[in-house]
Image (tube, rainbow, N blue to C red; front, side):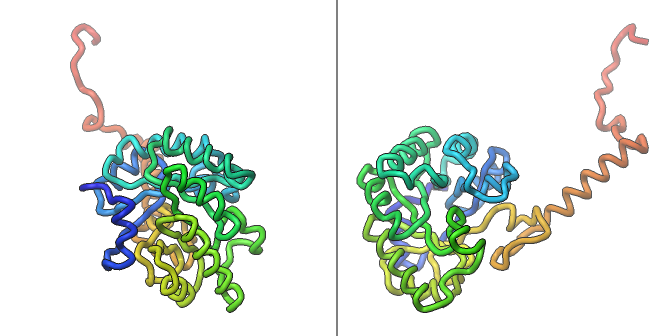
Length: 272
């Protein structure tokens, strides 16, 4: 496969091409993603919850993203990798945002960075783009600022909220973002925004009127019993993994494992 490019992503706005994005944080998993048809990987700050056990994303640092991102990059030469800018490392100043983005591009080898916020982040988006780094915007349900939203709740449920989302989309489009991730909004709202901007949209819990679709890897593979409403389980690995762990334990307790089949049986002269 050949890696999708920023101009090719931009072109999906008019050429009808659809593409996919999933989160991924480790080398072992990315070796499978690299063999798949999925075009993009997000090394997301969701690793705070899926990999580090945090309650949310706010505690994630650039070093966390970089360490996991390096592992992902090593075996994904044809997959487009997005580095997720953590909370507190781009909202203090434009210079801070450029510095963090530079680190991700240089130390991970990202193809672009992603950051949350619309109008409030537009100046940082523009500065990073002007510095030569492609930017994916992120509006709607923005987990880093979910406390202002009362938690992880659907956004855009009133006309005032819809118009504010459209203003956010237009602001980061004008700032130079080449694609916008829209999370946790009604399908009709995403459709309305899409029809009023010229930038392609990646949806996560935003309906089907998008050029791209994103899912959290652990949700789509069924690692946990509960997943968000928008997350389709394409596998149900959690129960299968638990069953494998328990079967291994029981076979060891019963003396059924390891058998000679799973042992090295080379004869050592004189050992007897």
